[in-house]
Amino acid sequence: MRVVFLGTSEFAAGILERVSDSGTFRPVLVLTRPDRKRGRGRRPAPPPVADRARKLGLALAQPESVNSPEARALIASAAPQALVVCAFGALIREPLLSEHMLLNVHPSLLPRWRGAAPIERAIMAGDARTGVSIMRLTAGLDSGPVCLAEAEAIGREDTYGSLAPRLRALAAALLLRVLEQSERGQPLPFREQDEQGATYAEKISAEDRLLDPRRSADELERVVRALDPHIGARVALADGTLLGVHRAAVAAPGLRAGGSGDGVAAPPADGIELGVSARDGRLLLDCQTGTLELLVVQPAGGRAMDAGAYLRGHELPGRR
Image (cartoon, rainbow, N blue to C red; front, side):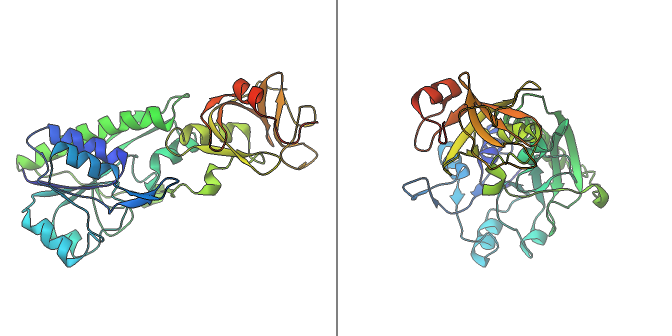
C-alpha cells in the first residue's frame, strides 16, 4: 500500500518509524515542516520527523506550505492510497483534504482534547484515562469522524515522559490495523463525533508553565507531571528569577512554608503567605490550598538537581 506520511513532532517520529518497520506500509514519501531556529544559539534545526525520515532512508520534503500547488503536486506524484497525518502542526486545507484519504492519528479519546496538546491537558485536568483516536481529517479542528479508538489509563505518577511512549505504541498499533483493513478493501467504520463532549487542548503557553501559588498544590503537581521532561514547569522566586521544576509532590497536610521558612516569593493573598521558601533542607511552594514540595529543580543555565543540592549551592532569594 502506498502511504504518504505527514508529521513533525517526536511523537509523530516514533509512529513513522513503526509504520516504516512494518514493511507493507513503509511510506513512499514523508512531508514535515521546514527547519526552524531553536535553542539558545537560535541555529536552524530539523524537526524530529525529518531526522527520523533521513535515518530510515525515506524520501523527504519540507515545503513551506503543504497546501501549496507544488506540495500538492509532489504528493500526487507519489500516487498515495492513504495520507497519514500525525502532529503535523499546520492546517491542511482544501483542495488537499478532498484529493486523498487523510487519516489523522490523535492521542486522545475524541471529542475530548481536540487540539495541539492533548496529552499534557489530560494530565493537567486529572483525567483517569486518555487514549488514541484514528480519524478522517476534515476542515474542522480534530472534528472529523473516528474509525478506531482505544483507551489508556493515566496513572497517579504518570508524566508526559511515561505516558507519551505508551500512547505512541498504541497509536502505531491502531494505525496499522486501520491501514491493513483499508488495504484489504474493507470499509472503515467511521462515526461522527459527539460535539457536546468536545474539549480543546490549547498549545502550552508560558503562562501554563508557571506554577502560580494562587492555585492549589494538587493542580500544580499535575502541571509539573504534564510538562516533564519535554517543556518543563517553572516557579518564580522572590527576585523574579525563574526556577525550573522537574518533579514535585503535594506535601503532607499542615506543612506550610509561608511565613515561617527562609524566604517568600509572592505577596500575601487572603491573609496567607504564598510562594517559595526553604525548611529543613526542603524546598516548598505555599499555595492557596496546600503546599507543593519541589523535589527536582533546575536553575537558569544549570543542570537539574534535587532540592537539597540546590539549597546547598544556592541562596534562596529573600532569605532572612
